[in-house]
Image 1: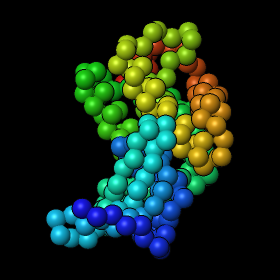
Image 2 (image 1 turned 180 degrees about the horizontal axis):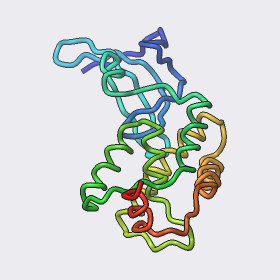
Image 3 (image 1 turned 45 degrees about the vertical axis):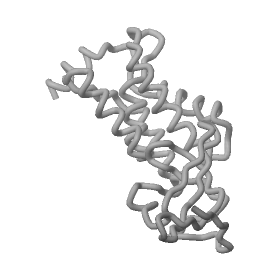
Length: 189
């Protein structure tokens, strides 16, 4: 298997040195576009580094779009995501294991709005009941994914991005209600 660097730095609208969002891993940077020979066939690959995860991924150029790799969101889309976290939490009356799967799928979709919905739905204010371990894990994963993209778009640190999300979460409706209160109001509507 041989590898060689390509001279041209743009493929399918993506270029080296650009930050992108890969659905299952979040924000990464295209470090290079390489050509590799695999099983006698030449393949062009994006070499993507995810610094926080200390991971390098090689994605076939031809598959990048179909697997959901995308450019960072525009600032107005980030603002929409921040508005989503200000909304009222929508918690379905299904078993936790089913909801956890749905939340996980939203986090790994790479869609900033879906990730914002998970952050909104799993957020707990100081005066609310404690989260279970798995709820907290999913909340932190969604918050981390959202904060990384906001940090990259707004050119700020991840800590500042987390603060920005938390400020917007606290602008939401009364966060002192319990989940049961929210569900009974949803049924009445």
